[in-house]
Length: 298
Ligand SMILES: Nc1ncnc2c1ncn2[C@@H]1O[C@H](COP(=O)(O)OP(=O)(O)OP(=O)(O)O)[C@@H](O)[C@H]1O
Ligand SMILES: [Mg+2]
Image (cartoon, rainbow, N blue to C red; front, top):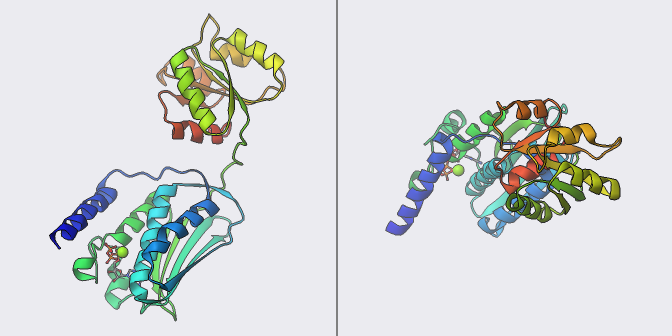
């Protein structure tokens, strides 16, 4: 009992940190269908045999700008609340629908007794719980926080059959994900080049490398299959990534720059006026998001 209390205490602290910590809504292009499929997998083991979960999605776009971690946490919280409400038997329904092509609406309904009168008024407040020692009362507070950060809204209500929670998040279609292709990577530091090459490979791309503008232009002339150019600003020799932009042939593939120069540096600023620029150092995820949004960012 002590151990489980300690576990609950630890979980409580984590959730408090989620709410009070400077969490941000960081949207990246995300596959909504995959997110919902993952959610179903995550939730299934937590549901009693007599409780079913059905998910229906009618949003036409495949790729949306979402913070998948935060959205998944929130939906999982709603599903677990619905499970608690259902007891041993019941149904949980998650509907995802577009509203006026402006909002993505996530509605979780259950066949439990519904929100009590007090819960209808206070359930979104931190520490409001009707579950005694079993609940922290932070689940819905965290959901409320997430939705606020995302610029959306939450409603809680009762239907004829049970409780209902509705989240509206801004519906922001993401640009079509970039298909894996052949990336021309131009970077003068061999170590950095190797690291970035591996990140790109792990994301499905083939990579061809150069250390200078001259080398890059020679490869570009020989290889018509290059789909994307990713270049450092400072390179081997006198020519920079900015010179590369000037010397690219007509009809060249999209070109993105990266640099460790501070944003105030004249070269960094000049670059930002022309193409998307990724600041080094970056993580594999940062590179992925940058390449995926390639050309549309800024
Ligand atoms: N689907 C639901 N049906 C009926 N009441 C609900 C439902 N979801 C939430 N509530 C009510 O809102 C209260 C607050 O929910 P919240 O998720 O914030 O905390 P909790 O579920 O009590 O605790 P924890 O999330 O830590 O398990 C619940 O205690 C319950 O009274
Ligand atoms: Mg809860």
